[in-house]
Image (tube, rainbow, N blue to C red):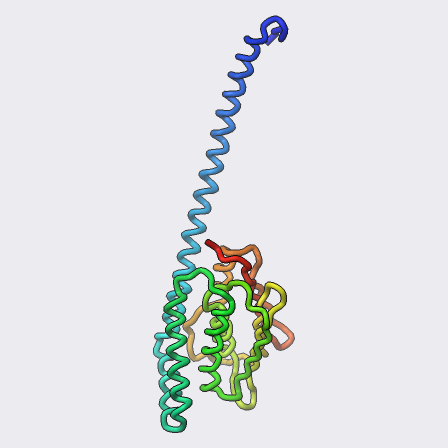
Length: 239
């Protein structure tokens, strides 16, 4: 401004104040623009997550009321009633526990790992009544701290049973273990040529839900005669 600061310091201060106000105004406009763009993208992502979550809830509920699941359950129950009254009562209890858990947890984002395992044991017992010693499930976990997406373990176990042969000649072995903050669900591969029930929930849906909740990915490994899924355990409950 060709001003000697010692001659007219107040005039220079006024010029500096005007320049500062203009710079702040331009900066504020730029930041607000980027803020609203980011906010809009976040809203879109949250809505997409809600749609994926609702889709998973719907598919889960649908998988338990579809004719194939009900037919298999009622067929097993019918055969048990004639042969073993005690086992039939146990089967009914396990089936009711599964439906109750699905209805109670379907709207939650996360559930305690211990609660999920209490449920998965009912689901495993139900399938062991149906398949007997042809299905072997080995749970190697002594630390149940943390949270997981509700029904995620059940979906992995169900998919393993549905996509693989379970027979006396080819028993299916499912192992559930923990390594730090990761759950590992593994089964030996003996793929069915045809899958009787095409309905159900894919791993992609679970992956999308985890992407919205944590930076740790859900990892799928397929090779050396095994199918393995590594599920991240979330340390803190998201509010």
